[in-house]
Image 1 (cartoon, rainbow, N blue to C red):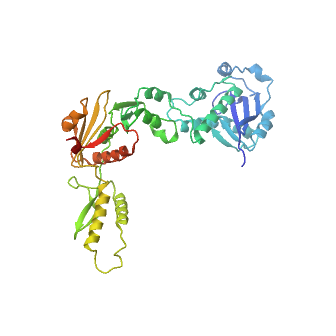
Image 2: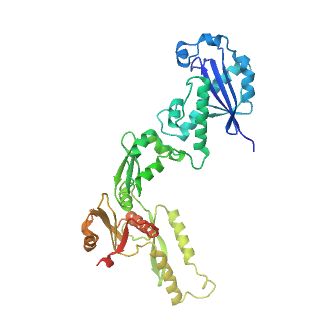
Image 3: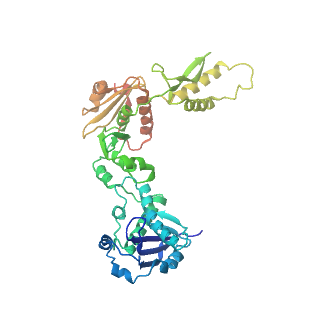
Length: 425
């Protein structure tokens, strides 16, 4: 495998305009994770250097008088750039200026390039500034001899390494934007809802979470997949719910669940079967779908599960025993869409120390939720009186609760538990 060779470049010039001339140049040849060549030189621009450039760089007209002209160092530059990838912080300026100088000599400079400025803007979205100082501060890179070609080239090389780590390593260093670091210190490691807001205070994303601190850190981690959120989030509000399920319920108020199709069971000549129907509030569905394609996919899956080759090549219909077995399989498949019992109570963590969350399920639907500091015995005696939020056959709430109970059933360390209301009597 051919090893890539990079040449990290920094230029100091008479200005930033298109008519600028080079006054200092540094090239660091980087290969096999080490610097194999260092080239630096002052360059006589054959013109006076503006006073503000001298004050910025410390490079005076006197020091440039004996320096080589560009054409005298052009071969040294070309020999290093040949076959390499050009790297600088703002290649549009640095490489553009080099191309201009070579063009004046009748040579067209063709080379692949890598801009640390553009890559930083992609890999670390949301920073207020992407100049070399800001990025080196972000990565804790110390710059020696700032605004001198060799000092800035070394800093650019360190920045290049950090960006390569972010870009290619499966587990890059964990980095957060400075403004987000401050936000996350205020977010508790409790269950609840996170409201991500933009600069105008508008909620642009809501996340229900078992651990809000961890969720915030995952979503605000600097990586390309989080780009949109990182660019827009200016503040995060945390609402403690104690119960992760109640957090999911509350999220539904902002992101409602609107099914368009349901799968139900129907009866034809004593035989049960699954059927897709358009969703209506008076239709009791087993599975709910936002589109017909998803509903058809599920229906085909159910049909495959029910398929029985016993009587395919036999004349006549199924026997009563076969219909009974078929109906039992239908009931078994439908059972997974129901709660473990028609009437349940879930008691979990509350919002504060000593408080408990209460969720009540009646007739296979979530009736409501609430909070109390009363004893379990008092709650079991009359659970409905603790409900501060009621639901009326809400499919989204029911689906979330069923999913939550399935997860809860498989957890080794449970912070909440459920019981059949029949057991509490």
